[in-house]
Length: 176
Image (tube, rainbow, N blue to C red; front, side, top):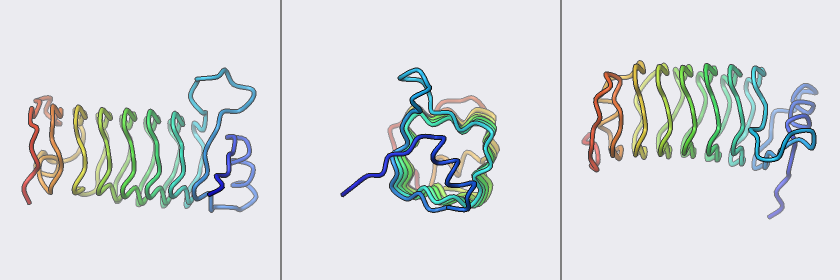
């Protein structure tokens, strides 16, 4: 299988020319950046983008708009979505390990089967529940989501911080 590697500049250039399908790409650092830094996509409007199965580790989507995007099965380890708008998106089976989604707007977004190990959803806004998620060392401090939606529906809970600041120690699987 050939994996297409793209820099942020190439991705944005193709997007601005009307392309929306970037399935399976591997986002790499721009040659102009310091190696090891985050991949800068801050503040961009990337609505309706298809990043299904893409490798987007360390991508910084701070204040970006990915509304209606398809991120099914994407790998976003250590990615940043601070204050990002990710409404009505498909994030089914996404890997958000060590990701920062502080104050993200996730209303209407599908998050079922996500791996959110050590992720931060502090003050994030959720539209509805998710199922079968891995929520070990995950934080939902001040998030707009009921505790029952976090601790139920087959989600794995383990040292997970609830919206009220309490910690569910676990490990346990949430009931339906």
